[in-house]
Amino acid sequence: MALDSDQQNNRFTECLLYVSQAQVAAVSKSWRDAEQLFSKAIALLRQNLQARDYPAEREFYASCLARHGRAISETGDVTTGVKYIVEALEIMKNLRDSDRVLERDDLLNDIAETEQNLKCYQQRSGNSSDLTASTTH
Image (tube, rainbow, N blue to C red):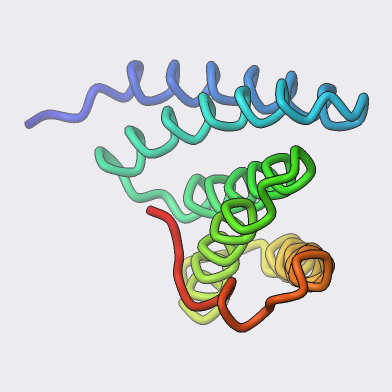
């Protein structure tokens, strides 16, 4: 199967639009809107990652998962939100430990922020051990 770079790039551009809208919704504390928009972005990124495995795109995917998890947690479903955050951290740490990422500082900052959010939501739920045991995919 030949890779259609235009299709992949167009999908990524559409994803960026959803993420931008989701970030605006999150800043406005419109968490359900943010959740839906991040979900659309994640679906597009998953399609791209099946067709091509760019480290920067995988890192962006992990960042979107973490933000999606935060939005879900803020709507009240902390358990599901934490599952996305845990999955994001797993991807980020795998990228950190590989030799495939050039911008390590950005990745390390994303990991630190995601770990902080995870800790916050685990404390909010009052059950940290059960929340880190499973991930969503």
